[in-house]
Image (cartoon, rainbow, N blue to C red; front, side, top):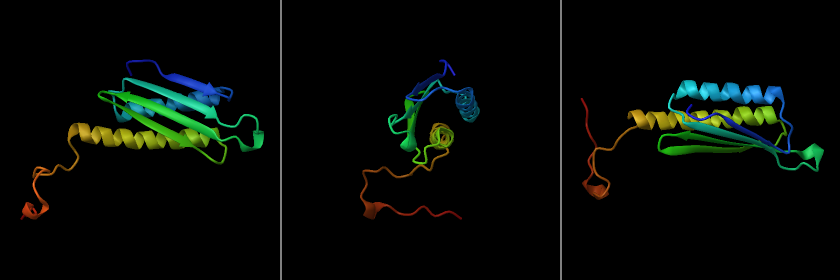
Length: 126
């Protein structure tokens, strides 16, 4: 990663467990795609006044060449660790899709999109 990981906690105290989890998951993302230029992770508790109904909100912004991959995940059960895991799973999926598009593993249509549907014929393979 070109820039250092930005980790922000709002309305929640940072713990070594949460910080190490985020760092570990960012390292996993770097193994998926080596050209990540930056990453910002924000963990927020939405409702600080009501201790029993705290809903963790995890926002992940991963910068890759030409695009930002953004995930917002809110976990209703109130568990910040689970919310972080689920948010990183979602951004990993986006990163895999981005990587597939970059290396050309996405199905391309042979005919231009401006042709009418009636003119399109299925491609037959033997």
